[in-house]
Image (cartoon, rainbow, N blue to C red; front, side, top):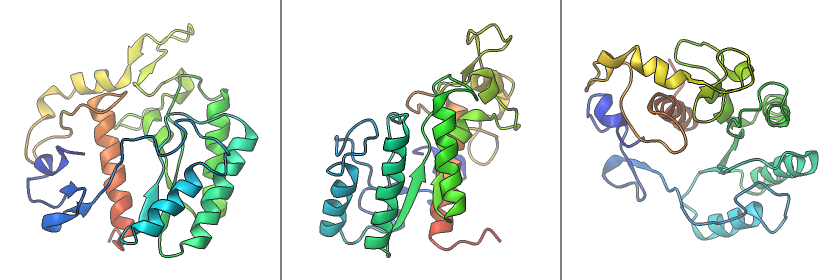
Length: 222
Protein backbone atom coordinates (compact mmCIF):
# COMPACT_ATOMS: atom_id res chain seq x y z
CA UNK A 1 0.00 0.00 0.00
CA UNK A 2 3.03 2.27 0.34
CA UNK A 3 2.75 3.90 -3.11
CA UNK A 4 -1.03 4.24 -3.13
CA UNK A 5 -1.14 7.77 -1.77
CA UNK A 6 1.27 9.06 -4.41
CA UNK A 7 -0.75 7.30 -7.10
CA UNK A 8 -3.98 8.83 -5.84
CA UNK A 9 -2.65 12.38 -5.94
CA UNK A 10 -0.21 12.59 -3.01
CA UNK A 11 -2.83 14.25 -0.82
CA UNK A 12 -2.14 12.23 2.36
CA UNK A 13 -5.53 10.52 2.36
CA UNK A 14 -3.95 7.07 2.03
CA UNK A 15 -1.05 7.55 4.39
CA UNK A 16 -0.49 5.04 7.19
CA UNK A 17 2.12 4.33 9.84
CA UNK A 18 2.56 2.17 12.92
CA UNK A 19 1.72 5.00 15.34
CA UNK A 20 -1.09 6.79 13.54
CA UNK A 21 0.81 10.08 13.63
CA UNK A 22 0.20 13.04 11.35
CA UNK A 23 -3.38 12.09 10.66
CA UNK A 24 -2.36 8.79 9.07
CA UNK A 25 -4.14 5.49 9.50
CA UNK A 26 -2.88 3.72 12.62
CA UNK A 27 -1.76 0.45 11.00
CA UNK A 28 0.34 -2.10 12.83
CA UNK A 29 1.49 -5.22 10.99
CA UNK A 30 3.86 -7.33 13.11
CA UNK A 31 6.34 -9.43 11.22
CA UNK A 32 7.18 -11.84 14.03
CA UNK A 33 5.56 -15.23 14.50
CA UNK A 34 2.77 -14.45 16.96
CA UNK A 35 1.10 -17.80 16.24
CA UNK A 36 1.44 -20.73 13.89
CA UNK A 37 2.32 -19.76 10.33
CA UNK A 38 -0.33 -22.19 9.19
CA UNK A 39 -3.80 -22.06 10.61
CA UNK A 40 -4.33 -24.47 13.50
CA UNK A 41 -7.10 -25.10 15.95
CA UNK A 42 -4.68 -24.86 18.86
CA UNK A 43 -6.53 -22.97 21.59
CA UNK A 44 -3.18 -21.62 22.77
CA UNK A 45 -2.60 -20.13 19.31
CA UNK A 46 -3.88 -17.06 17.56
CA UNK A 47 -6.92 -16.49 19.77
CA UNK A 48 -4.98 -16.36 23.04
CA UNK A 49 -2.31 -14.27 21.37
CA UNK A 50 -5.03 -11.87 20.26
CA UNK A 51 -6.38 -11.64 23.81
CA UNK A 52 -2.93 -10.87 25.17
CA UNK A 53 -2.37 -8.19 22.54
CA UNK A 54 -5.73 -6.48 22.96
CA UNK A 55 -5.57 -6.58 26.75
CA UNK A 56 -2.34 -4.59 26.62
CA UNK A 57 -3.18 -2.42 23.57
CA UNK A 58 -6.64 -1.05 24.17
CA UNK A 59 -6.35 1.54 21.39
CA UNK A 60 -6.76 -0.98 18.58
CA UNK A 61 -10.24 -1.48 17.15
CA UNK A 62 -9.65 -3.80 14.15
CA UNK A 63 -7.92 -7.19 14.07
CA UNK A 64 -7.20 -9.28 10.99
CA UNK A 65 -5.10 -12.46 10.96
CA UNK A 66 -3.42 -13.15 7.61
CA UNK A 67 -2.21 -16.72 7.15
CA UNK A 68 0.63 -18.09 5.05
CA UNK A 69 -1.69 -20.98 4.23
CA UNK A 70 -4.82 -22.64 5.50
CA UNK A 71 -4.83 -26.03 7.15
CA UNK A 72 -7.28 -27.66 4.79
CA UNK A 73 -9.42 -29.78 7.07
CA UNK A 74 -12.79 -29.32 8.72
CA UNK A 75 -11.50 -29.31 12.28
CA UNK A 76 -9.04 -26.46 11.71
CA UNK A 77 -11.40 -24.29 9.69
CA UNK A 78 -14.25 -24.79 12.15
CA UNK A 79 -11.93 -23.96 15.04
CA UNK A 80 -10.77 -20.81 13.24
CA UNK A 81 -14.37 -19.68 12.79
CA UNK A 82 -15.29 -20.62 16.36
CA UNK A 83 -12.28 -18.80 17.82
CA UNK A 84 -12.96 -15.67 15.79
CA UNK A 85 -16.59 -15.64 16.84
CA UNK A 86 -15.58 -16.06 20.49
CA UNK A 87 -13.15 -13.17 20.22
CA UNK A 88 -15.92 -11.01 18.80
CA UNK A 89 -18.11 -11.79 21.81
CA UNK A 90 -15.29 -11.01 24.26
CA UNK A 91 -14.23 -7.76 22.56
CA UNK A 92 -17.41 -6.21 21.14
CA UNK A 93 -15.67 -2.86 20.59
CA UNK A 94 -13.21 -4.49 18.15
CA UNK A 95 -13.99 -5.40 14.53
CA UNK A 96 -12.59 -8.81 13.64
CA UNK A 97 -11.95 -9.36 9.94
CA UNK A 98 -12.06 -12.87 8.54
CA UNK A 99 -9.87 -13.87 5.60
CA UNK A 100 -9.72 -16.53 2.91
CA UNK A 101 -6.54 -18.38 2.01
CA UNK A 102 -4.43 -17.38 -0.98
CA UNK A 103 -4.70 -19.38 -4.21
CA UNK A 104 -2.46 -22.42 -4.59
CA UNK A 105 -3.20 -23.43 -8.17
CA UNK A 106 -5.70 -26.15 -7.24
CA UNK A 107 -8.68 -24.55 -8.96
CA UNK A 108 -12.37 -24.93 -8.30
CA UNK A 109 -12.10 -28.63 -7.51
CA UNK A 110 -9.32 -28.28 -4.93
CA UNK A 111 -9.72 -28.48 -1.18
CA UNK A 112 -8.58 -24.86 -0.76
CA UNK A 113 -11.59 -23.59 -2.71
CA UNK A 114 -13.89 -25.83 -0.68
CA UNK A 115 -12.66 -24.39 2.62
CA UNK A 116 -12.57 -20.83 1.29
CA UNK A 117 -16.23 -21.31 0.36
CA UNK A 118 -16.90 -22.53 3.90
CA UNK A 119 -15.40 -19.32 5.29
CA UNK A 120 -17.38 -17.19 2.82
CA UNK A 121 -20.66 -18.92 3.61
CA UNK A 122 -20.07 -18.54 7.33
CA UNK A 123 -19.36 -14.83 6.96
CA UNK A 124 -22.43 -14.26 4.77
CA UNK A 125 -24.75 -16.29 7.02
CA UNK A 126 -23.52 -14.61 10.19
CA UNK A 127 -22.95 -11.05 8.94
CA UNK A 128 -19.18 -11.12 9.45
CA UNK A 129 -16.56 -8.91 7.82
CA UNK A 130 -14.43 -10.75 5.24
CA UNK A 131 -11.28 -9.72 3.39
CA UNK A 132 -11.60 -12.17 0.51
CA UNK A 133 -7.97 -12.55 -0.50
CA UNK A 134 -8.60 -15.54 -2.76
CA UNK A 135 -11.35 -13.78 -4.67
CA UNK A 136 -9.06 -10.84 -5.43
CA UNK A 137 -6.54 -13.30 -6.87
CA UNK A 138 -9.19 -14.97 -9.03
CA UNK A 139 -10.05 -12.01 -11.30
CA UNK A 140 -8.17 -9.45 -13.34
CA UNK A 141 -9.29 -5.78 -13.31
CA UNK A 142 -11.59 -6.48 -16.27
CA UNK A 143 -13.40 -9.21 -14.29
CA UNK A 144 -11.94 -12.04 -16.33
CA UNK A 145 -12.03 -15.17 -14.17
CA UNK A 146 -8.98 -17.41 -13.62
CA UNK A 147 -9.73 -19.71 -10.68
CA UNK A 148 -11.11 -22.29 -13.12
CA UNK A 149 -7.75 -22.10 -14.92
CA UNK A 150 -5.73 -23.20 -11.89
CA UNK A 151 -4.61 -19.67 -11.00
CA UNK A 152 -2.21 -19.30 -8.09
CA UNK A 153 -1.24 -16.36 -5.87
CA UNK A 154 1.40 -15.19 -8.37
CA UNK A 155 -1.37 -14.85 -10.98
CA UNK A 156 0.01 -17.74 -13.03
CA UNK A 157 -2.67 -19.78 -14.79
CA UNK A 158 -3.21 -22.61 -17.27
CA UNK A 159 -4.03 -20.88 -20.55
CA UNK A 160 -4.70 -23.95 -22.70
CA UNK A 161 -6.14 -26.50 -20.31
CA UNK A 162 -3.21 -28.91 -20.49
CA UNK A 163 -2.68 -28.95 -16.73
CA UNK A 164 0.37 -26.67 -16.70
CA UNK A 165 0.39 -23.01 -15.68
CA UNK A 166 2.01 -21.30 -18.65
CA UNK A 167 0.74 -17.70 -18.51
CA UNK A 168 0.30 -14.89 -16.03
CA UNK A 169 -2.85 -12.77 -16.13
CA UNK A 170 -1.32 -9.87 -14.18
CA UNK A 171 1.68 -9.57 -16.46
CA UNK A 172 -0.60 -9.74 -19.50
CA UNK A 173 -2.85 -7.01 -18.12
CA UNK A 174 0.08 -4.77 -17.19
CA UNK A 175 1.67 -5.17 -20.61
CA UNK A 176 -1.57 -4.09 -22.25
CA UNK A 177 -1.75 -1.02 -19.97
CA UNK A 178 1.90 -0.01 -20.00
CA UNK A 179 1.12 3.64 -20.65
CA UNK A 180 -1.27 3.84 -17.73
CA UNK A 181 1.32 3.60 -14.99
CA UNK A 182 1.46 7.32 -14.28
CA UNK A 183 1.29 9.51 -11.15
CA UNK A 184 -0.77 11.15 -9.87
CA UNK A 185 -4.32 10.16 -10.73
CA UNK A 186 -3.38 9.67 -14.33
CA UNK A 187 -3.47 5.95 -14.81
CA UNK A 188 -5.04 2.64 -13.97
CA UNK A 189 -2.26 1.10 -11.89
CA UNK A 190 1.00 1.81 -10.09
CA UNK A 191 4.18 -0.21 -9.79
CA UNK A 192 4.90 -1.91 -6.48
CA UNK A 193 6.54 -5.06 -5.12
CA UNK A 194 3.91 -7.06 -3.23
CA UNK A 195 4.90 -10.40 -1.70
CA UNK A 196 4.26 -13.51 -3.79
CA UNK A 197 2.30 -11.72 -6.51
CA UNK A 198 2.39 -9.08 -9.26
CA UNK A 199 1.97 -5.32 -9.07
CA UNK A 200 -1.59 -5.03 -10.37
CA UNK A 201 -2.80 -7.71 -7.98
CA UNK A 202 -1.05 -5.83 -5.17
CA UNK A 203 -2.93 -2.72 -6.32
CA UNK A 204 -6.23 -4.58 -6.18
CA UNK A 205 -5.51 -5.86 -2.67
CA UNK A 206 -4.58 -2.35 -1.53
CA UNK A 207 -7.79 -0.90 -2.97
CA UNK A 208 -9.83 -3.60 -1.26
CA UNK A 209 -8.06 -3.06 2.08
CA UNK A 210 -8.67 0.69 2.04
CA UNK A 211 -12.30 0.20 1.04
CA UNK A 212 -12.64 -2.19 3.97
CA UNK A 213 -10.93 0.22 6.37
CA UNK A 214 -13.19 3.07 5.25
CA UNK A 215 -16.37 1.05 5.69
CA UNK A 216 -15.29 -0.07 9.15
CA UNK A 217 -14.64 3.58 10.02
CA UNK A 218 -18.19 4.52 9.04
CA UNK A 219 -17.99 5.54 5.37
CA UNK A 220 -21.23 4.56 3.64
CA UNK A 221 -19.96 4.52 0.03
CA UNK A 222 -22.31 7.38 -0.87
